[in-house]
Image (cartoon, rainbow, N blue to C red; front, side, top):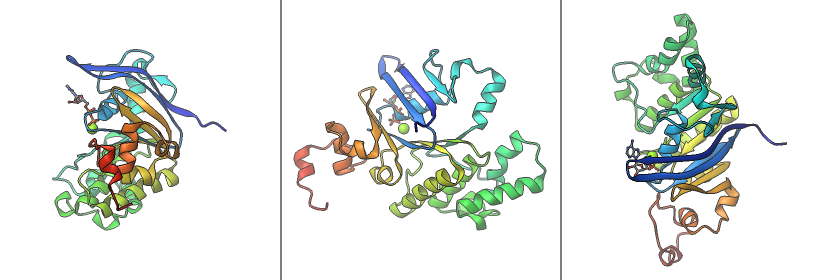
Length: 262
Ligand SMILES: Nc1ncnc2c1ncn2[C@@H]1O[C@H](COP(=O)(O)OP(=O)(O)O)[C@@H](O)[C@H]1O
Ligand SMILES: [Mg+2]
């Protein structure tokens, strides 16, 4: 049974001044999948995501989400669209002057007319889900790095978005906190049925959570397929990621083959 395509990108081309970043990017994202955009630093991963978020102008018939070309949204459709989208940035900072509870409540306060006690219930439910039930009255400065990420994640999903975009969500975390965050994102996908699109160059994360892999190289999607297919790919630059897991740095194969810690 084929799943519904929630996102389709066709022939996305992006240049900044003289610099051609994306030559021709096409891919699709299916409902319920965790799809990872992988690629070296500077390859254009965030640029792809920002165009999908509508932060830059795009040509007609290039990006459709939930079956609609994003350039055709009117104001109301655009708002509806953004309410369906959870966004979790690398430095998706919380507001330091507000408690965690108030930070997570913000989208509900901006976009709903729910009474305060209903908002508090929803916030507490989401904080439970990300294992931060005790942080409701704490301020961001009182949280560890891993807790801050989880609080930002709770805020990203407070409106129950069917689609979650994450850009390098694990950046700056120690390996254990990173593993916890990955587990959590998987749990959210499984419990809330979200479709997840994640930009990362953390190979350990990809191995844990990806259903599908999109590999950006030289301005195109050089590989699109399942995690298993990605790991068997003969594309040298993609192989480098999986063999060595250097976080995006190019390594020679002679170096890779001298590794003993398999
Ligand atoms: N708004 C911008 N103006 C000019 N250059 C940009 C802009 N955004 C990104 N770039 C350039 O485009 C390239 C890809 O950037 P980015 O998408 O952030 O890469 P990645 O997320 O894969 O590390 C980089 O060379 C970056 O410097
Ligand atoms: Mg980036």
